[in-house]
Amino acid sequence: MPPPARPVPAGGSAAAAGAGRRGAPGALAALGAALLDLLLPPRCAACGDPPEPGTPFCPTCGEAVDRPDPGCPRCGRPGPESLCGPCHLAPPSFDALRAAAGFGGPMADAVHALKYAGRAAVAESLGRWMASRVEIPAGAAVVPVPLGRRRRIARGYDQASLLADALARAAGSPRLRAALRRVRETQPQVGRDRAARAANVRGAFAASPAVAGRDVVLVDDVVTTGATADACARALREAGARSVTVVALARAE
Ligand SMILES: [Zn+2]
Ligand SMILES: [Zn+2]
Image (cartoon, rainbow, N blue to C red):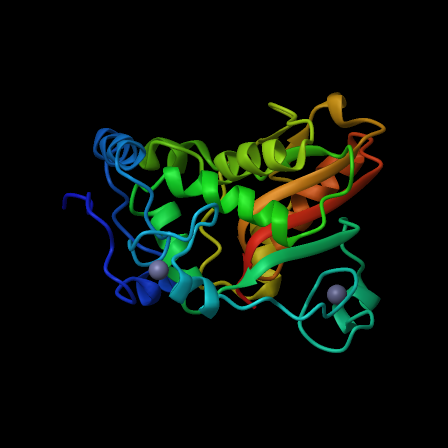
């Protein structure tokens, strides 16, 4: 089935993005869609209308994007602004997790455009936007959650890496390359409960000694339970990172 090369209509993709799509487009088709997207004038990341200058969204979608409550100071889980139950029982390997938005409404469409519709250009505006919504620790090295090789080939680009590039530029932070890699492929996290997600990604990442003694900003697109971010942060800490702050585009829980 050919991938959609044109803008995804508003509201039409939220369910598909939430459910995790099957049938990733072929690498060539994905690359073609990504190139086309770079050549076209800027479009709202969610609905395809002209965006408000300097932002990823048109005024209507920008209004509708929610900002998550501060929640747990450690993991950002919604609720009272005190350490949540899971963080009390088993503190995560990261020092803090912050998302630029919740996953509802226009953000679901923007994530779909970023991950499944070949809209690599939206990564640039979304990455800059993340840097304006979430406090980025000064001087911290920016590292993306690495995409599995199979998925990178299927998609033709790595969305977390593109977000990290744009976020680092906007924040004036160093972007560390090849600092974190997957040492084994993992299954998609969609449809798994918290324990199964943690087991699926445990030990799946390794970090390079380049992170030793550094504060690290770990960039991901969507966080749900934080299991992947935790496994990445553990690898970064084991390689000597001084602190790990997870910065996500959206929080789905
Ligand atoms: Zn819009
Ligand atoms: Zn927590």
